[in-house]
Length: 106
Image 1 (cartoon, rainbow, N blue to C red):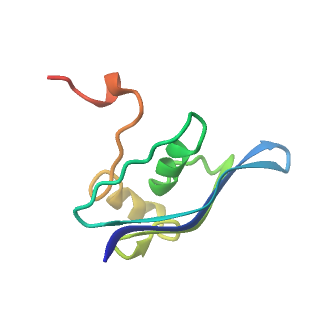
Image 2 (image 1 turned 90 degrees about the vertical axis):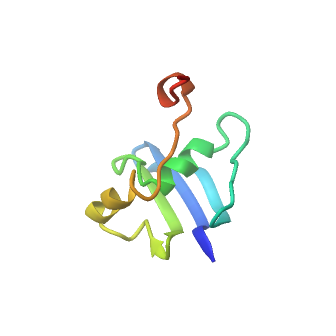
């Protein structure tokens, strides 16, 4: 059983009034308990946007994530913000790109 199951994730951002750019289109993957998943790609390919979408950290004012993101059998795109706060940091987290601020070398 997958601990994380992303189905048809599409993320778009408003760049001008009623004009949108799709950054991630119909992305699907799953992660089983005990597995490790590496997301790699060119700069601008959507790695960070995908991770931010899973964490529901895309700004609601300019971005929109559609699809399904199941974590422990709950669709993270449909739960309330207070439920998401209980999940974020406690059950799921991410290490941001800047290693000097994210990882302690000691």
